[in-house]
Image 1 (cartoon, helix red, strand yellow):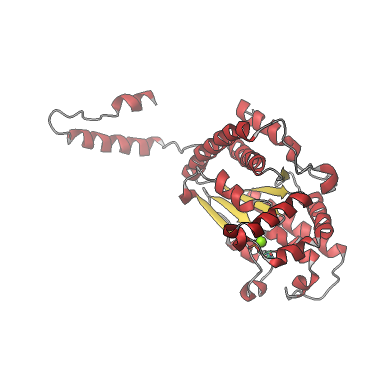
Image 2 (cartoon, rainbow, N blue to C red; image 1 turned 120 degrees about the vertical axis):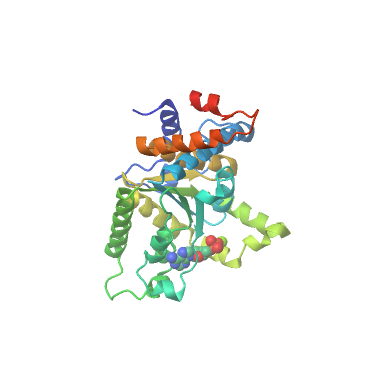
Length: 315
Ligand code: AMP
Ligand code: MG
């Protein structure tokens, strides 16, 4: 039975979910400016604070239980706010329990392996939250838009038409299914930015000296491929949103809303997993009580043998 919190979160994130098996055209189906009734940034701040607190609590339980891992896959257009989303949404969690990996152009060693190799190597261990800042989905996005990147992958010869990309989607779905059956829950977020908002954010990066480092002229070259990317995104969302690892399209024209929505999707996953602090078996519990008796016997004169006695009785 879903708890009220789980139901509330499920209801909030429902409009972002890509129904497995449905065919979506990104621009028709998802509005980058959608706010889902959260009218102002101020109103949003409280929601985000609650979300961050929830993540912190559940991350701690996930770590203590050490059974599941959560892999957050973040994909987006340039300037959609991946870095800021990671920084804000994860601001409350214990850094020891989180591992962020950013994927760039593959190295020659990486190109000497199958394309999922480098992603497999970077998966979170049990109890951890892993974040992929860009991910294996680049293999059906940038690699699809720029065919010369595919040529560098040293694949066996064969056709490279739509059947090839269908095969890649299938391989990715199979891999994610394998992960989910092994306790690694894959949560996929696509930050959806409008073309106009991207233009404004690029200009900001150019105009503000402290932001210049984030901008490269190649970002404008990529923007020229906008329509090809939109097609690649639409096909990716339609082909790889599965029951075991659905896609969520996060409206990203307002950074503050994108952060709330991302926190809600990740929070929902954790609440659904419902990790618990481990309970000791009776024998381990007995040996704890023996240790307790020894420590109590060492109490100096006048000191309480166990200052927590009352509290542990309550727990
Ligand atoms: P950034 O995230 O802005 O530092 O840029 C990283 C760059 O690496 C982007 O231009 C990506 O398109 C590129 N990239 C990431 N993954 C791949 C991949 N699998 N193949 C080719 N290029 C990639
Ligand atoms: Mg960039």
